[in-house]
Image (tube, rainbow, N blue to C red; front, side, top):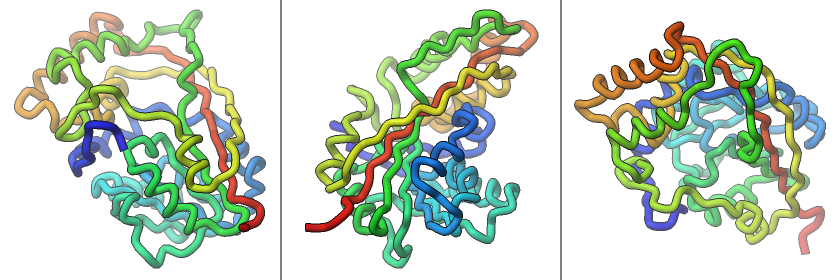
Length: 282
């Protein structure tokens, strides 16, 4: 859990409607890379913890006989159900509204547990221990995120870059200089050190893999606004009565950068860390 911060149910309140449009997708080839890495053949079960609107669970459903998505936000669960229906995988998907710390009994055992940029919000030692007890022999935990260390140049792309730094400054103008998160703030950001947490829980690893990105993407002003409202740090409810003012100022900022309302950026690479269950128990 984040030092000095307590989770509350408003962390991602109101963001689900913006998530699919606003967030950049994981790198093409992620499913194929995971299938090869974990020897997935369509017969196992996946639990996606902190599943959000089903981004990972839906895109990986073809690799498993069943996927279970768990998220505490009701809006995210509703959106995940819609995404599963659109993808034609409703029959093999189950969606559970619950905190990872309160995983309900009766979900069964799993081949793979995935965390798509969600683990840092949790009581990680508690959740890691719970997940270990739910994994089958030979099972794995995978932590999936954008590769944070790469530089994604927009040189030679047709439109201006998304002005992320300026958007961040505008958010700070409205919400204050310290990152918001639900009803609290993150004085020191979110924690790292997943390897130590999972080692304490008895997992082996990790194995690191990078699925390359770099593809040119075009983003509209509405996409960038959706990105802002998809973030816990600038969730719509945080602006209160000033939400419309913030959006109007954001639109002006974006129009100044790109009068045509078009922006370019490159697809992030995706970083995967995999931890395995021990081959034998002592």
